[in-house]
Image 1: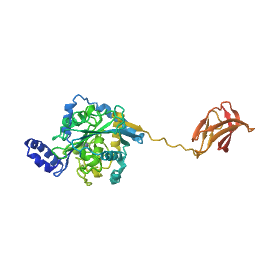
Image 2: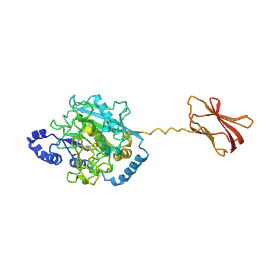
Image 3: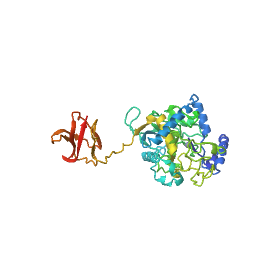
Image 4: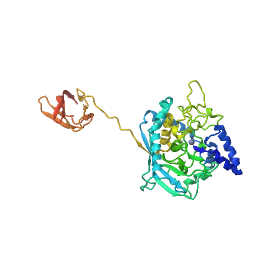
Length: 450
Ligand SMILES: [Zn+2]
């Protein structure tokens, strides 16, 4: 849920401040347990949950109840609705204290493109997914577009820009009650109806000039696999990202890059980190509730393909550093799994359905193999099938008695199969003919017993 980076050279400057020093000790413990030279530490779950507990202690735990609903929907997605595409309406709130933070529109558009590519598995680097993970790599079938109408129904670009007097929204240690001011009118930009839009705030999240927090998001309230204390009030729903991780071509882009927002939207749709947010000592026993992501002990750093932190059994898979829900560098993140996709789609359906429009797949094109008239004898309906339909041609059905006198003539639709109405008066033997451009293409002698 939180992306936090820390830079050791900055630590030294902070050490001059005694207040920061005591806080820093906690951070150092976290850093040394993952990697001495680490640039990224695991997500600050404890602080986050403590904060949320203070903010939203009244929220009840209804996870068990929704668990089965979500699973049911999840299964449904796999089996029947995989081709359904959801398009999420997005509004970006850009908060800036200087012109650098006021990102130009090109960066926001390329970021949107990154989201779309990654959630449709159309990004070029999907070719980097290792063969062992290809069987579970999945297209989420979720797309994103800038809102065209604001909550009042007025035209909008989907990008709000607001100056702020705050030089940064970041805090060390993390204090989201302060950072969440980005969602309030005084210093930030208030949420657009979170039941209709995905709100994305872009702002400075640095602390004392170093890039600390890269982004955070709240899971859908009551989503399965999350502690009840993980949920936030309605006006906090959405994603916040540091301005240095937005836009593929942003020259300030940090290591996790424009994939950071993909990760955060994953949280927003209810995914957990692939290592399950356990501590380094218990990590292999803490799951992300997905069966198709291998167990891993902790967040990864960099792009270490050889990493395998949990050796469970023979044939054990390495850590899936390709997954967007890891902390690996953006350049080696390139996949969601089938189960993650099912989870996000079920959560979108269950908890955030108002933010997306649904596009159903086109029905399969029906083609008749034969031009035919049946059944014979005709006891109920007369059905016509047309093969190799020429859309430019007129088709007709003509019925004559055995003397060649027409008793029925009707145009046919240029459709593979249709039922002919209005034949109730016919009794006995007739000749049924299919005409194309006035010429017979089929004649059947048929008995009518209507
Ligand atoms: Zn995260």
